[in-house]
Amino acid sequence: MFGINAHTSTLEVRDHMKCMFCEECVYKCTEDYQKPNIIKIENKKDKFLFRVETTGVLRPVEVMKRAFDALRGKLDFMKKEIEPLTH
Image (cartoon, rainbow, N blue to C red; front, side, top):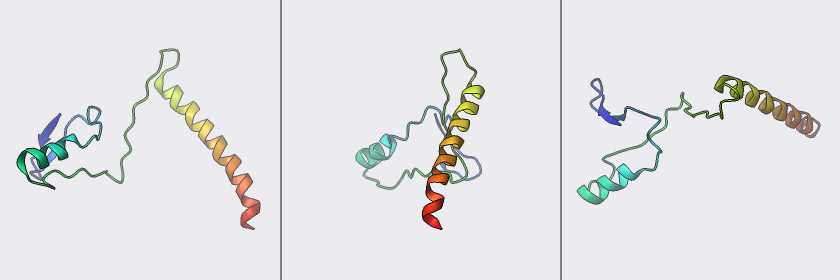
């Protein structure tokens, strides 16, 4: 799951889908080696990682399209509700 980046010589998660961001690695290093901050977990500001699971009735891409359509509808509704308050 982890590996050393050859370019930066830093420890990185190789399989992001297996990392749950539980920070157990941070606690374990601090506890076992008395070295706080030896591992630092940071988010990448330009990335968003998530998993789509289906029952098989719809393909994941169709689930995402429908989810974005629903979100767009809710945001449009909120915009209409908020606009009168801002003018």
